[in-house]
Length: 268
Length: 147
Ligand SMILES: Cc1cc2nc3c(=O)[nH]c(=O)nc-3n(C[C@H](O)[C@H](O)[C@H](O)COP(=O)(O)OP(=O)(O)OC[C@H]3O[C@@H](n4cnc5c(N)ncnc54)[C@H](O)[C@@H]3O)c2cc1C
Ligand code: FES
Ligand code: FES
Image 1 (cartoon, chains in turn purple, cyan):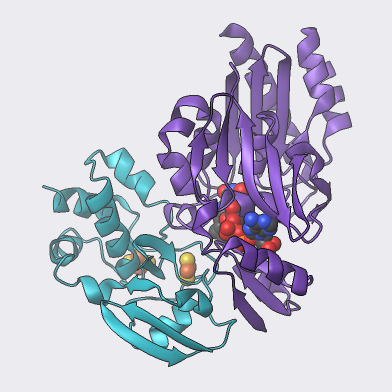
Image 2 (cartoon, chains in turn brown, red):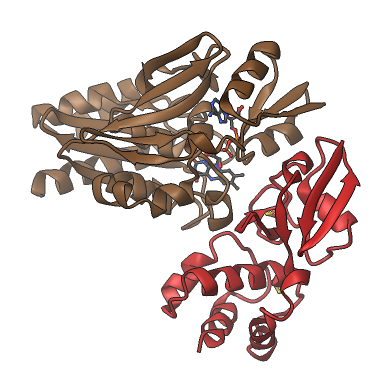
C-alpha cells in the first residue's frame, strides 16, 4: 500500500488528481475499520495535517466549520455552543472521548454511513458544503451529496468546509443504542422547528442519512394521529435489519421518537 | 517507510509498513502498557496521548506517527502515581488488563476537567471497558485521586 501525506491544501488537491483511486485519510476512525474489513485499498492520501481546514468561524449569518474540525473541537466551540445546541447534543453522545478527539466532521459526512449522526443533524440545519478539487471549488447542499449506500457525488473532490445558516429554531434530538454511550446508533432522530416548519432526519433509518419529507409534511399539517405517523414513516424510511437491530425495532423506535418530538416541540 | 517521532520525550527513528497500526508499532518499541483489546476503537485499552490528545492507538496508522509527539503510561509514571495507588487501594484493579487505559483516561480527565461529580466521572469513562470491576470502584478511585 502506498501512503502520501499532504502538507498543504494544494498538495492534497494535486495528490487527489494524480491518484483518483486512492482513499483519503483524516482522523482514520472509519478508514482503520475499512482497512481491516477489505484490504483492496491501493493507496492513502493523508489529509489530517491540513491545519488550515480546522477552524470554526462565526459569521453574521452562518457558522463555518472546517472539514477537519474534530468532534471535540466542535464541542469546545463557544459559537457552536451558543447557536447550534443540536449539534452539541449529538456530539455529546457520539462514540467516546478518545474517538471524539480523532473523528472529523468532514470524515463523518464523506464516509456516507447510514449511521452518521452528525450528518443527520446537519441535514436539518440546512448545511451546505464547500468542495475542492484541482479544477476549483463548488458549493453543494448536504441534502444533494448522497446517491446511495456509502455513495456520494464527490467527484475526486474533498470536503473543505461546512456552512450552517443561523436561524431561530427549536430542536429535538434522541439517539437509541445498545449502551448509553460509545454507541453507534440503532436509530437517531434530529428535528428542527423554525419559521418554515419542521425539518426531520435520522440516522440508521435509510441507506444514508436523509430528510423525512412525508413526516415533515404531516407534522406541518398539525393533523397528527398515530396511524398517519406510521403511514408517513412507511413512505420515508427503509431501515435495514442488521446484527444491531431488526427492521421492526427501528421502525417502532422511530415512531416513538417522532411522537415525542412533536409533542415536546408543540408544547414549547 | 521511515518514521521519526518522539515517544515519552525521547526521539525515535524506525521502519514501518504503511498499514501497521500505531498500537502495534508502539508495543514493538517496548511500550507494553499499551494493550490490544478489541482493535476497533471500542475498549480503550490502547489509549495514549497523540499530540496532546488521548486517542485509540488501534485506529491510527503507523505513518500518522511522522513528527508526532506520543506519550504512554511509561512516560507518566510520576504524574500518575497517586491515581495508580488509589486504583490498587480501592480495588479498582482485578485482572488488570484494562487498568493502563483507565489510568490514562483518569489522568486526562483530572488535568482537563476534574469535576468530582461521580456522574461526570462515569460519563468520562465512555471509551473504556472493564470486564471485571463493575466500574464503581474505578469511579471512586478517580474521585479520591482528586482530593
Ligand atoms: C468505535 C466507533 C464508534 C463510532 N461511533 C460513532 C457514532 O456514535 N456516530 C457516528 O456518526 N459515527 C461514529 N463512528 C464513525 C466515525 O468515528 C465517524 O464517522 C468519524 O466522523 C469519521 O471521521 P474521520 O476523520 O475519522 O474519518 P476517516 O476515517 O479518516 O475517513 C472516513 C471517510 O471519509 C473520507 N474523508 C475523510 N475526510 C474527508 C474530506 N475532508 N473530504 C472528503 N472525504 C473525506 C475518507 O476517505 C473515508 O472514506 C464510530 C467509529 C468507531 C470506530
Ligand atoms: S484495542 Fe484500541 S480501543 Fe480496543
Ligand atoms: S480489571 Fe479486568 S478488565 Fe478491568
